[in-house]
Length: 252
Image 1 (tube, rainbow, N blue to C red):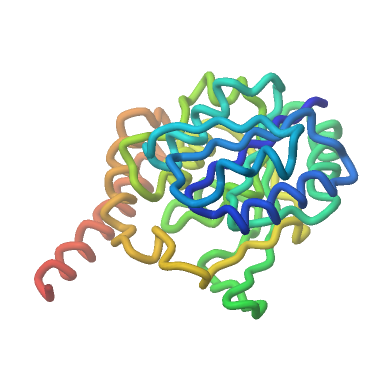
Image 2: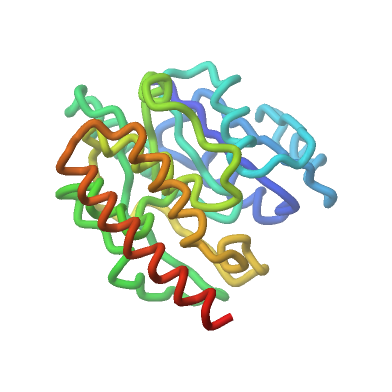
């Protein structure tokens, strides 16, 4: 199985080096590492000097969705793995997913458990983000509990459901995973295979009212979901989020 690892980045030069090294240290070798530099103004342009064999593409700042989509478009492999430049893979991450998909050829996307590190300290993952793997659609309907860095998927899946929504500043992963899980079965590898870092900067997700974007994603999903049962679940979740948003606006 050939795998292209796509790493979007914006002003994360030092962290990006850690992320790339974690891909190079894999027990299963990726076919290519694609770094999409989304308009960085730091030293990120030097990254190919540090790692001559990666594919480095610079684009004007258009957001993480556009960066990932650009990587998907140029990827030569049938299988795509995502890695945020803040995060890193455990050494056996790709091997475990390859083994899973070889054993389950009908499943075209997998994700993994993760370790969270904040300000250098491992922290407990909040209950709402814990992964069970029984019904990925239900588990992700309220909050996105699938980290992009944990995902590996077959390119054909994106041809069926579409790419990341470039109009969403945040929650673009929530949007795409719901579009996928609404119609397709995915698999959880119940092992911690990525390390997610936070606390080094005012990360985008911490600066946004996420429910505004979740509401947009849920409204879109209603237009494409063909399951009446799931449509009712979406409508219920959407109504709850709109009510909470109205309460926030009244307090503001």
